[in-house]
Length: 114
Image 1 (spheres, rainbow, N blue to C red):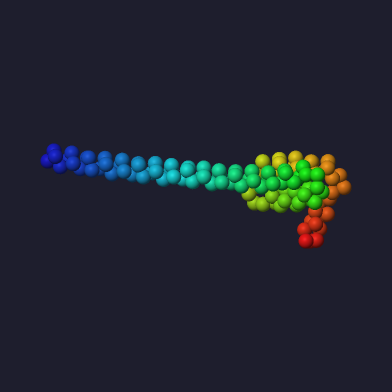
Image 2 (image 1 turned 90 degrees about the vertical axis):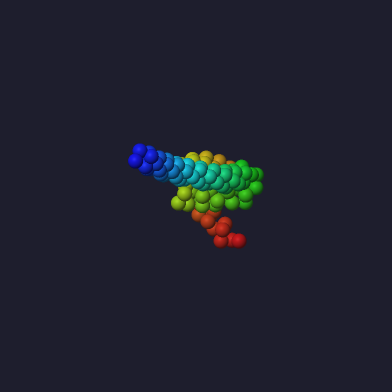
């Protein structure tokens, strides 16, 4: 009888440990997936805004217009963050300094010309 009780106790304990390990694995897997998604988003963010920044500081006015269009597009997406808004404000400020006569309406028409 003692052996049966001990065996049952060991079996139940093993089951609890297995459930705990399963929960820990799921939590760790979800955290890893979120981290991977964040890193992917951050990499794409850097690529997009680097493209915009390079063109916004160009000596070529058509490149600056392209940067203005892309910057405007980037801040209208659902996934826009505070970082996007901050970068957009700096890019917009730079573009207004380099092209004081530039308007957003003119940028939209540039798309129609092509």
